[in-house]
Length: 575
Length: 51
Image (cartoon, rainbow over all chains, first blue to last red; front, side, top):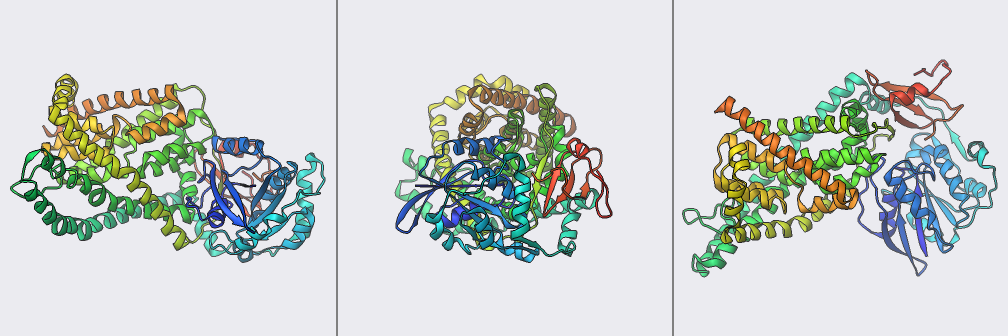
């Protein structure tokens, strides 16, 4: 038996899914968090049930890729399936529109009335037993995020029934209206103070002030938490605990030889410099754990708070006009923000965009000009030594690249960008446990994905250097790398390893002791020139081979042009 | 998404220069592009604003 979860976007399907199955899924307060089908198992009355969570849909006719995914799965329903229709109790009218469509599918069904607590607070009284009587299927009040009512829900799955309700399709909304008249009581109320304050974030002037403050505060918190963790915990640990251990190991290995070179790398004045030694156990562990993880944690903490509070859709409204310039609409800010964490989930979340054209632009922009947090952390470490102006030039250049590529794509790709049409969910207080779980999941995901690739990258870098491949490619690519971009020949190693992991690639620049100008050019070129292998695979899956090659061609061209121009400009300005 | 003939709309905000408009329909708020908002015909009442 399968339990298929269907409902409007942002009604809390994923929260209930994770309660029923115990599976770890991302839950946020904006429409379009879930963009693929998720499966899990649950047990009800000693029966094993497969639970399937779908992206949200407004009706059975899909309007974007994520809805398409749900609609095609719904066509595959069999007699052994049960539909769990999750509805938002605070918005019963609109939700019941879909419920009535689902009833026509003639599949056993039950209804979960989610946000039951919020409905009570906002003066919406729903009579669940009487709704159950009208629809002829079980209707269970639940609060997905806290798990209230989900036990009853799972017990009542076997009572799921085919609704006896008969109505004319054209009179669907009249039917909804009639049902509501008997089951829902609204106590009239004025807008609360909270709502009025909330609306300020949607108004043009106050909204812009709030957006700038929120983004600036987010940036400050990320920097403060990330740097604080590095300075107070991770660096002291590596310097005081790990270094003595590694120096001991170095002695055992006889302070030399290939194994020593591989595990410990090179010592600087008899000490370990984690930026330069490039051994598997030194730089290979230092990069993911001490340099990147703290920033990852800080970033995902802030992002998750923004997601759960419901601020992102408001930012989408404010950014809508800007995003139209680059051929997207406001919701495009979501993949861009996710891309600052990692480009892989960003590429996946492009499914919330309606057309193929938008998805292509969205994925191209994130991969070309939105550096991931792993890379940003390394850039801050490397270029930060040259002062804040180096960082400012790097990120400003990336922003300009983002704008230019976006405007060019918007101009030369056929079609135009659809208008925004999006639910603006109410502000909600982030639920601490679910927030902590989300941050934890994302960090585990990062470590699982990153550590093997970082170690692989360090290993490969060592191999390529010792075999002489990097020297060879360096000489071949010299006209572009040395001539056009003004970088030393050895920096080509970073460009090669960048395909595996961009953080390691930036790390490879450290031993080269680049100048102010070279550091800036190298960081920008590394950010732009090629997607890392994980992103590469995801783009292949989402866009197909032809368009993957197009994205890649755009990236390489952008890297050469922006690297060359930046080199020239900086030569003129700083010499 | 809940905007149908006969429902009550309240305009919450509008961005300048043809940006999106946010309206309240029942208990939810919907952001819609300017072009779309222009196509919504409303009769103004004492608490409702036309877009």
